Length: 163
Image 1: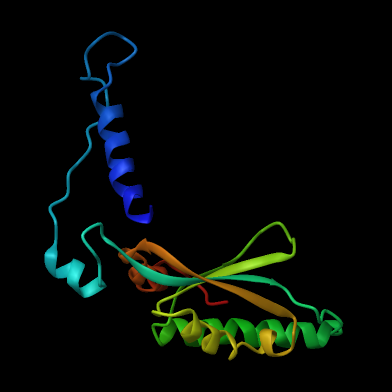
Image 2 (image 1 turned 90 degrees about the vertical axis):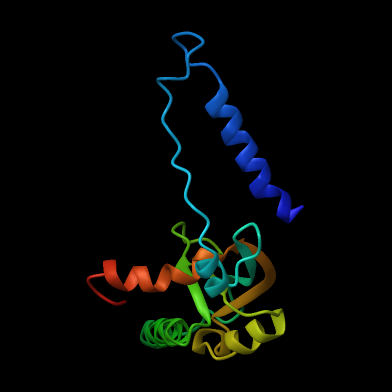
């Protein structure tokens, strides 16, 4: 099923483009879709399959069983957690990370650029917040755009400050 998503999306876009506008049967008022030329070298560099996709491991960060730290210790763990995120990103193991904004039990997510859940489990074990039981991670293999591996490069160019 995972490989049918992009072809289905492409078919839906083509269908939308081919539909008539509200003013009549003409499609001249519809936005034009620019077709990009396939870049084989970039696809190979990114490890993309024929759909421009590849496998990652996604981690859902959840509130852990140990939330009893005082505010000073909790702040220290958060700082160490952010430092660990930066280290993993610099090593090329973490392509995406961020918190959820609703303060629920689901705290955030990671996308690891690794082949197996076991590799991701080893990396999550290096997180001080996980070691302290403040966070736990649910790990799942995930199929997404190979372009995600470029996120950290782009982010470093648009971020004025580092967390």
